[in-house]
Amino acid sequence: MFDGGGSMKMLAAAVLALSATALQAAGPAYIKCAFKDGKGDPWPVLITADEANGTVTLLFEKTGRVSQMRASFGPELVKFGDGSIDYQLSRVDLKIRRYTAILRQNDTAQCVLAEPPKRAF
Image 1 (cartoon, rainbow, N blue to C red):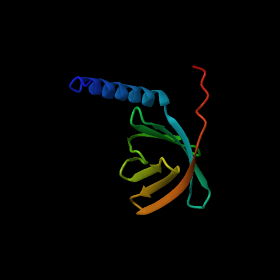
Image 2 (tube, helix red, strand yellow):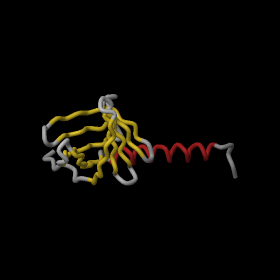
Image 3 (tube, helix red, strand yellow):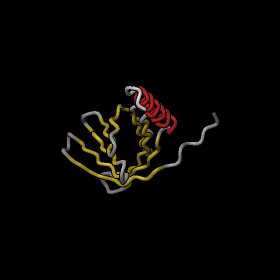
Image 4 (cartoon, rainbow, N blue to C red):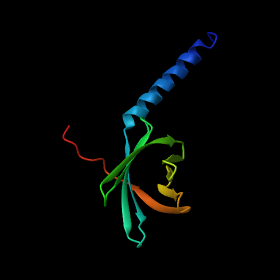
């Protein structure tokens, strides 16, 4: 009935291969957040979270500034930043926390899933 664990090893390898394929096929997640600026006005940020490549890209819509950085994707949190500004994005409720080191300040925002950009190719 058992062949010394060979079947279990093959099953485990197949599950891992399917999991990796599913992860790559999922593609990036597009998330829209709006922090408040110094006046209390919305400061929209579009986040592209690319788990397959381990990166997060931020597009600050008011200025057009784009910043890409390495990210750590855990089961509940995505963590990214550059040491001067660090982020934690909840994969559970889409709340984001931003810590600004020079100000020693935390602020939070609620995010929503955004539509992927339309592309011609």
